[in-house]
Amino acid sequence: MSKFHTLIAGLAACMAVAAAPAEAKGCLKGAVVGGVAGHVAGHHAVAGAVVGCAVGHHLAAKKDREAARAAAANPVPPASAPRP
Image 1 (spheres, rainbow, N blue to C red):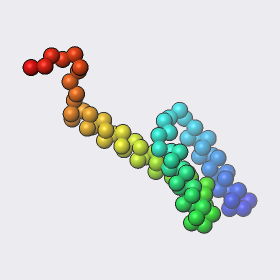
Image 2: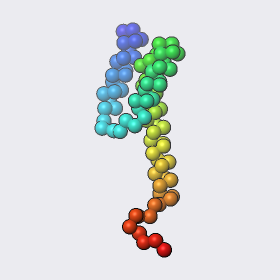
Image 3: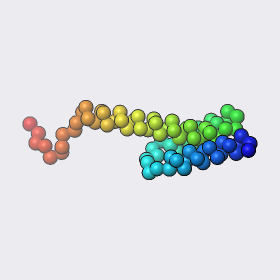
Image 4: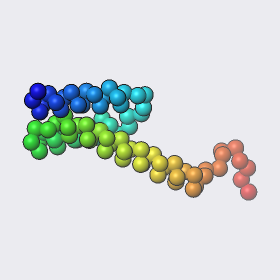
């Protein structure tokens, strides 16, 4: 089997294993950017898209964690709370 076919088979296996219900925040944007970068860097668009998806998802999850920490540190009083 050629390297290309091996890569495609490996990617298909990874996708089958990782096909669990999950949020894909950041994945599409990362995949597009990674695919373009991979294509420009030597026709590795598929590999770039896979890595870009992983990086985009990681950054989106990190942003969500930071937003949750900020919200926990600065609680907003309910709208029905009486004002002093």
